[in-house]
Image (cartoon, rainbow, N blue to C red; front, side, top):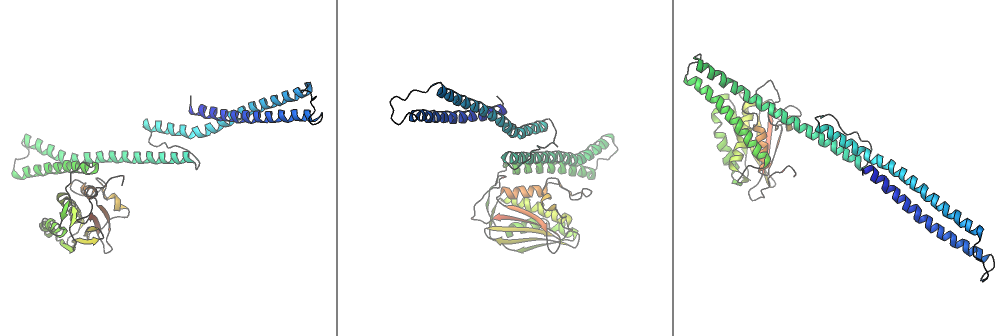
Length: 368
């Protein structure tokens, strides 16, 4: 039996039970009052008081008929009211079912049209929000696949063209040409490795070994590797402040710093500077990377951490396009958090917070 039928039948049975019980009680009470009234008509305590005659039995019969009619009327009214209420309750559920079926068939635009402020309307609103989230994630996955295909297509096209030219003798096999082919292969390898690392970090499959680390030594060691690149571009590197040991995985934190510094150097113009500042904030250590480039556009503070996000599609970001997304995932996997914004004095600012050594290592989870 459908939900509508069950609700209508339940209302009808309740109405019949209430009407029948109340009618039975009313009949018994009325018949008792009539019998006492007939007896009292001959005087109190008169042993000759007769049993109810035809007139009295007719009154009792009419009373029983009235109870039966009222019970039947209550049954009909209960069935009608139950059916009406059941249809009102089931209609939004049917709308939800039709919307879910439409989504299953590929219609990503339909939403459940449910009015009201009750629990069913709240369920429909949550259901619509779920569909919005699913559609958004599906679009993100499509965009991710398109971005991966785009980033793979360029080096593969270069490799294919150069290899065909080498095979046909149109391109001499010189060390310079071989180095260019090796560079394209390294770009492909880095993209594949970045995708693997990002997938492991987001799924919780990345094995991290948190340990007490001296942030000053770690930052200076990473910056030494960028000294030549920064000098060639005319960018100054600075370390500001100090902080006590923090709790993190050494290789993961170095990878985060590399990604943040790569991004900072890419957007810092010649003559600018990149600052790495350290600071203690309660039970955490804050590590911030600031550049003197153009900064972030309004609304980019969260989007810069999305995979393959490009603030200006016409401008190549270089690399695999996953650096900031990997940095965010690694920091959260180490129990920290990361934020982006614009520095008051200009330029972009990326900060991450990690627990101090001696604190509790709590890996980030999506449900937290």
